[in-house]
Amino acid sequence: MDFRLTPEQEQFRDSVIAFSRKHLAPGARERAHASGYPWDVAKLMAGQGLLGITIPAADGGQGGSLMDAVIAIESVASVCPRSADVIQAGNFGPIRVLAEYGSASHKNRFLKKLLSGETVISVGMTEPDAGSAVTDLKTSATPDGDGYRINGSKIFTTHSAYADVILTYVRFGPGVGGIGSVLIPTNAPGVRRGKPSTFMSGEEWAELHFDNAHVPADMVLLEEGGFKKQIGGFNVERIGNASRSLALGRYAFERARGWALERRQFGKLLAEFQGLQWKFADMKMQLDAAQLLLYRAAANADRGFPSPDETAIAKAYCNRAGFDVANEALQVMGGLGYSQEELVEYCVRRCRGWMIAGGSIEILKNRIAEGVFGRSFSQR
Ligand SMILES: Cc1cc2nc3c(=O)[nH]c(=O)nc-3n(C[C@H](O)[C@H](O)[C@H](O)COP(=O)(O)OP(=O)(O)OC[C@H]3O[C@@H](n4cnc5c(N)ncnc54)[C@H](O)[C@@H]3O)c2cc1C
Image (cartoon, rainbow, N blue to C red; front, side, top):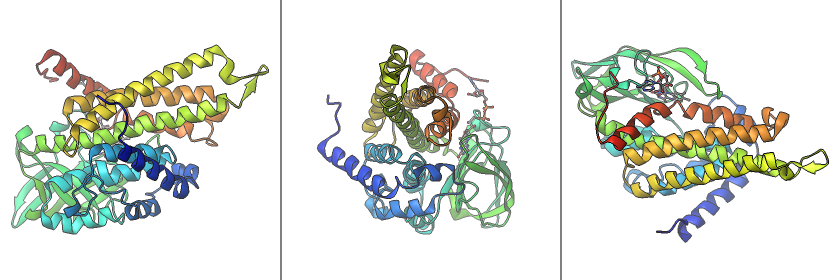
């Protein structure tokens, strides 16, 4: 067993950090507070080969491993936390499910533009009455002529305010077995964006309404019975979510460490107070433990989807560690940490959301407990 990156991985990490320092360090703070999607960053990253890292070269990607994508997202986040969202959207989210299960025509129509940073895709699972209990979703796909009529609503969909296409979980029939997914272009007739809103992190989202929206039959990504495959792909999204939690916690930690070596009170450096040294020791232990769990899940996946159990453990742990560390880093920086002069408060706000998004910590712990006891526990 070797806990170090390979020389190739180190080289890749260093090249992404160098690229990020050159292109993303300027304006990193402003980017975190800007609305909309950073399209300029997306195009830059496309040019650098940082979108579609795990997507096969035949489909326009880089043919790399999940670890490569994790290294990329961590390296970008270490310089510009907000830009890591572009790595997420271009590698870990619904784009990966589209690349895995999409037809040649789906790839031709959507994937090319996604990989060139011109468009972005969202995943619409959550509904007003189906959050953690996602299999309660009601959005229906009813056969009609040469396609389907879609009716229902989605909420909290990341990037929904400007996405080109929504990978939408729908119900073709009753029960879990009736769930599948459809690609719905946001300009399709019957698709309507409702009330815009923002999360505490500043991320924008809009309600999505499908009012008898018609999609041709070839827009079906996964037919009924596809829920398990869908969630298998969603574990990749969870790894990206865990990576950003950890990376933003680490970003805040590094800022606080630098500050503790600079700021003097009572005639001493902050780093010289034992009460603060122990905070740093606790932060460091959490970061290191989270890192190992994240790399285990990513490295074991290689070019495939990560294991559900290792992903659940990595995400739950990284979400908690990222938030706790960012929050402690803010405390160490005092008023400056709480101010928008620094990105530490942004890291705290972003990390808070990942404890809920993509399978809350509680739901992941339910899954982990099932592994512990070797049986499933109905939540109903
Ligand atoms: C930043 C952010 C981005 C998001 N992006 C997307 C997106 O792109 N696409 C999308 O479809 N959705 C998205 N979501 C929605 C997200 O998936 C849901 O918020 C999440 O699944 C929880 O659902 P809920 O908010 O309805 O909470 P609820 O399901 O109502 O849960 C409320 C609380 O109860 C807990 N709880 C519920 N059931 C159990 C149980 N059985 N055991 C123990 N505790 C339980 C939950 O953990 C939570 O703490 C996003 C959310 C956030 C915060």
